[in-house]
Amino acid sequence: MNRLSFFFPMLLFLLFLCMAMACTEKNGFEAAVRMAVNKQMQTYPASTLKDLYKSFFQDKFGPGHLIGDTAAAGDYLRRELASYSETKGEAAEPTGWEGNFYRVNLSVVKNRQVPYGLFLDAFIRSANEVQPPSVAAWKREWKRIEAVIRSMNLPLPGYEADRSEIDSRLDQGNYIGHHSESYEALYSPHYRIVQKEIFEKELLPLISF
Image (tube, rainbow, N blue to C red):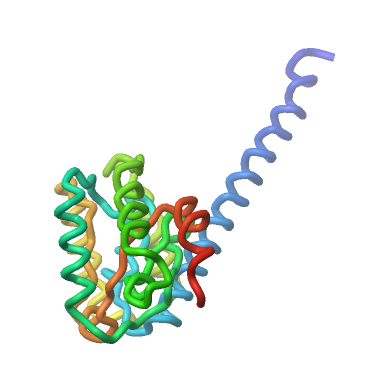
């Protein structure tokens, strides 16, 4: 038996194994994206592609920026808490398809379930400890996510315009997204992004859903 006849079946097996693993990874990714999208659309049916993008980018980048001035962050939080009376949305909900972070509704502070100081500290640590991907890597991942969203044929208003705007910003190295005006008007979002482990260990035990 020559070497080729000995190794060829093994090479075929390894190729098959790699293809099977890639297929499993792809199917798992697509299923997770679809689940995240469906959850958001059920909770916030007026969401646009911009609003979906925001959840997925927050899942990778967390709050999206380092917080050097904790006093200023605290003042801003206090002002936001005082700026409204009615609370909307869930107390906490995971971001994106991996759930690396949670959007934690300010209602948990306003209703005094979570102490203000603990909440602010959790938010600041979440922002300063995040290790985000490069914008180039995120751009590639977003392309995959957007392809899954497109395949779902959702009636998202202004889809093509939103897609072009997001792609243009990513081409300029800007990954940060914002809620659509319709989302802001309908759901009046007031939350902070908290890293998963911090939320589940320190805040979740205090929250009544």
